[in-house]
Image (cartoon, rainbow, N blue to C red; front, side):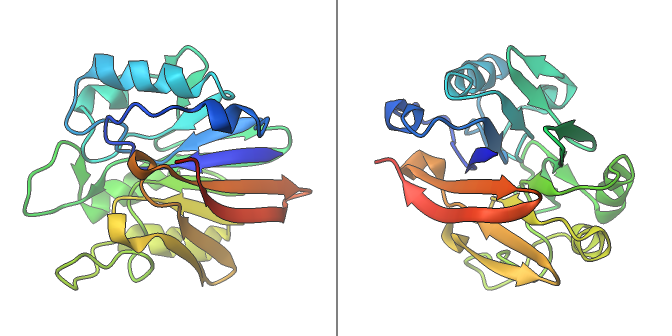
Length: 211
């Protein structure tokens, strides 16, 4: 399966036509679709991405809280706190971010994150706006602000890939146990991940840009 994964769109309407040529089968969006924007704006951006392929998404901390209550936007499906199977692969999602001093729209305590993760069974590919603690989660302040509950979940369930966002300066990837944790970088700047899986194994993995 050929997958496009993006995060941190932040309300930027980009020319997505270069991505149409790749013939992706699925788009994953790991949150911050808007920049403290409205539900209507989030839906408009999601519809733009469904021109590429069907979309699975979670809200980020800069998205309206009402997006957590939206199950479907055309061919875009919200998967916060649950899993879904597509072509033999199990996908799951976790939206929002850990508690911060900035009082952004969607923030969760570790207990709330742990509770949300209970709704997820086995998972091969996960999208989480928040990174796991200690991996791709260092803010400009130098503090690690990822989720400890998510870290524990990943080490126990061992997904193949977890796509994260939230930390704009943390573009790149590294392993946590047997799992690759990847931040594709801000889609607002044209960054994305090209991911191809075959028999639950990575066939192609490339950080790219369409700008």
